[in-house]
Length: 397
Image (cartoon, rainbow, N blue to C red):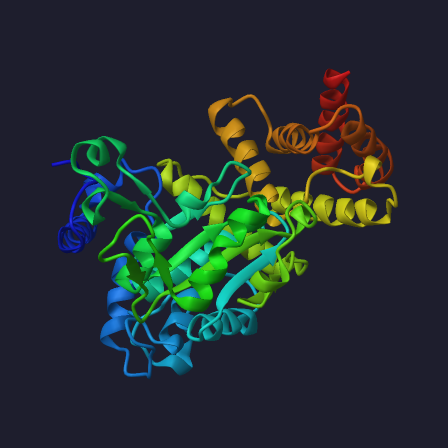
C-alpha cells in the first residue's frame, strides 16, 4: 500500500503514531535535527502548563487562552506557576491577546508586518500551544496552486484503483480541518488571487467539497480548526487580498521593534540560542551589540528621510537582519581568530545590506562618511568599525 493512499482511519492512526514518535525524540536524536518545531522544543513547558491549566478553553485546544499567553510571553510571580516560563515572543502583550482571542472565534487570523518582525514565529508558537502541531503549513509563493490548499491525487493509485478517499492526498489545511487543528498559511499575499480565494469557502463554510467523488465527498472541519496566515507588508500590491477574503480574517499588525532595550533582549536571546545549537560558547561583547543597535537606529532614520524608493536601502532593517549580521560577525571572529569583532561586524553589516549595486552601496557609503565617521571619534572600537567599513566598501568597487 502506498504511504499516501490510506483510509481516513489509517490516517488518524498514522498521525497519532507520528505524534507519539515525535514526543519520544531523545536528546541525542534532537541534536542532529537542524530545527525542532516549537511543540517539540518546548514540550516540557507545554505539558507542565497543561497540568496546571484550570482555565476555560475552546474545544480541542491543548492550552487555554490564559496559559497560551503565558507560554508565548512568559510567566511572572503573579501567575504562581511554581516554575519560570521563558519569554519567547517580545512583542506587545495586547497584540498576543488579540491574536489568541481571534483564533478562538470563527474568523481566521492574519498577521501582517515587515520582514523579520516575528510573524511566522508567533504563528508557530500559537499552533504549538493550541494544537501541539505547528507543522501543518502551506508556504505561499507565486507557484502555489489550489491543490496545495485543498487536496490532490496519488496519480499511480488513481490509475490502478480509481479516485477514492484512499487515493486522495489531503493538503495541510485539509488535514488541520479533519483533525481539528490550527492550520498555518505563510506569505498569503505571495499567492495569486484565484489561489487566495480558495480559502474563502474553507473559512466561511468550514468544509471542502470533493466533486470527483460520489460518496464521502465532503471533508468537514472539526472543532478546534482555524487558520493563522502571515503577510509581508512590503508585498502590498503584489497580490492584494479580495474584499471577500479580508472579511474572513481579523488583521493583527506586528510593528518593527523600535525600543532599544526590547531589541537588545531579542537579539541576545536569539544569538545565544543559535550559538548553543552550534555547540559554541561565546559571550556577546556589550560594545559590539551597542554599535550594531546604534548603527541600525541611525540607518532607519536616514532611510526614512530618503524620499525616493530608488535610493533607499532594499533591506527592511529589521531585528531579524541584525541577528543575522551579528551571528555572522561572531562566527567570523570565532573561526578566524585574527579578525577583531568590530572589523567582522563592519564586513558583515555592509555585505548583508548591500543587495543592489550601485544603489545600496551609494546610500551606505554616504551614511558611513557622515554618521559613522562622526561616531568613530567616540572610541577606538567605533574607529575600527569605521575603518573596516571603508575597506569593505572599496572591495565592492
